[in-house]
Image (cartoon, rainbow, N blue to C red; front, side, top):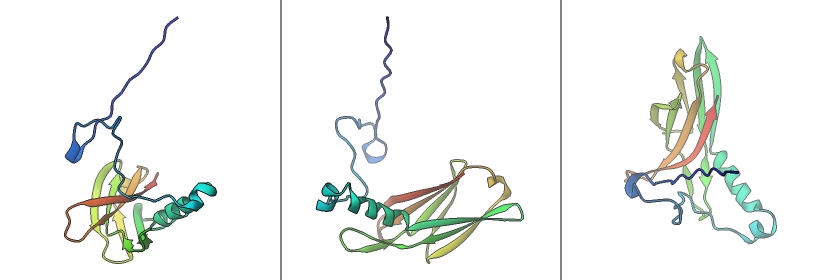
Length: 145
């Protein structure tokens, strides 16, 4: 008899590059304080909060003359601390490569992709960039396949 074991270590990237994730964990971009309702009712408040985050970015895909048009709508997110923030930057990846990085100045924008995007995986990543800061916080991702 024999036994095979696969071991893999994960390392951080960015400012803490090379430091291991194991035993140290990660720091979340969004902190959520558990509520009494979460504990007693199977995370009801957490699920509702997650739903608000997902509703902050919606995407409709239309085909126009063999090209794809993405109609992207953003909504303000009500955070647990009572503030409201809006996704103000998006990245659009086609076939896992960044094609566009756009600021979202208003509630709705449209982006026309060339014909080469048809049939390839498309991902829209929504970020919040704090004014005066160079840091972007990834809030959510939408995938279109």
